[in-house]
Length: 198
Image 1 (cartoon, helix red, strand yellow):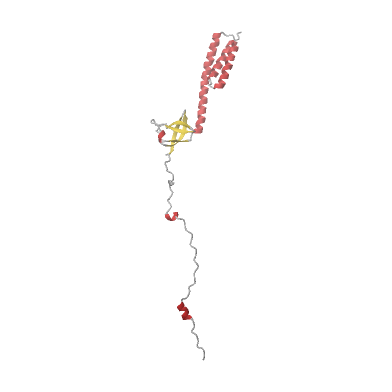
Image 2: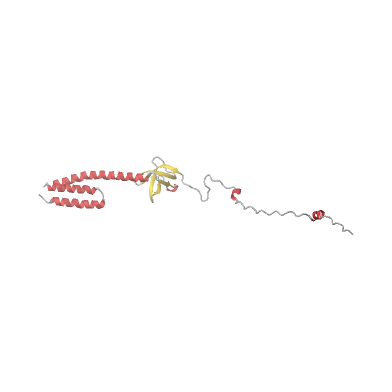
C-alpha cells in the first residue's frame, strides 16, 4: 500500500482552509477531488486511476457548487428585494439618459434605474425590484415639487385688509360733565328782593 493518500488528504485540508478565507465554493470541489484521489490511493489503485477519480469527483462537485452558489444568490436577491420594494426614488430631469433610463441616488449610492415598458420622466417612483445593479421602477407617485419659498399653500386664502389690521383697543369712556346753567337763566330764576318797611 502506497502513502500517496496522505499527500491527497493534506492537499484537501489546505484547499479547505483556503476556501474558508475566499468563500468561492469552487475550492470545495477541488477539495472533494483531492479526497477522492486519497481514497483511491488508500485502495492501492494506480496513480493514473487516482487522477481519474480526483477529476471525476471535482467535476461532479463543481456542478453541485454552481447550483448552491446560484441558489444562495437567488435567496440573497429575494431578501434584498423584500427590503427595497416599495421604497421611493426621485428621478430628476438632468439625470435622464437618451435611452430612457436614469441615474438616481438610493441608499447613499448612484444606481441605474429604468421602467420595463416606458421611458422615464421626472418624478417620484416606487421600486418594484432590483435587477443586479439596476433598479426596476414601477408606479409614478408624483411630479417633482417646484414651489418657490414663501408661496402660499394650495387652498390657502389671502387675508383681507380688515383681517390683516389688528383691532385697536377701545377708547376709554369719558365722564359725562353735568350741564352748567347759563347766567341769564340763573338771573331769571333768582327771587326779587322785598322792600323793607320804612
